[in-house]
Length: 207
Image (cartoon, rainbow, N blue to C red; front, top):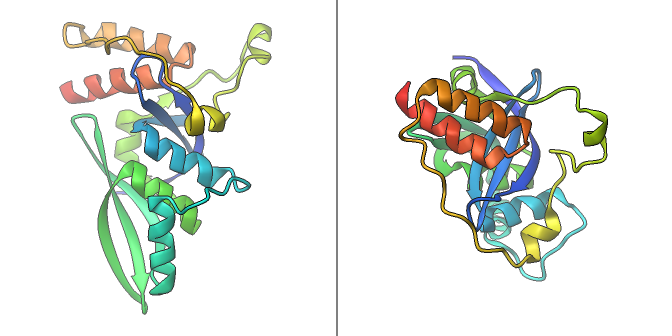
């Protein structure tokens, strides 16, 4: 199976699920995006790693892992999102020490937070991107040109915002695949990537 390299496009705060964020990964040599729902702590850690000027007063968990790895000459060479089961992404850290390679299982959010700290590339398999990737609008209208872009990193919201109470997550179990596809297209058009991720996960469970 061929690997596809991904970049981090941005982090979008969930409008429907309290404490959740949608991490948007972008296909390097294509137009597809891979939204992954992550928790607030992981979003904070990723946002801080993206914004190089932000330095927490004490090491976060992922910073501690990086410091530990540096001390013992362990390097994370790459991250591979290798499996998607029932809407859950599974990832591996490809590590190296003394020219010996090891593969370590990790949550995708943790793996990406560490990839940023090690400047390690992020990959997924083509079949996962074929199954879970979505296309975004390419030509925004004039009214949308002044709107916040999907690649903006909401660092302030991630680090120190008071989250508003959220509405219950919508259930999609009673929807047909055709209805889910319509909802997915609408969510993408509205740049509601967290909702799009949940709809896509429901569709992937049935395929």
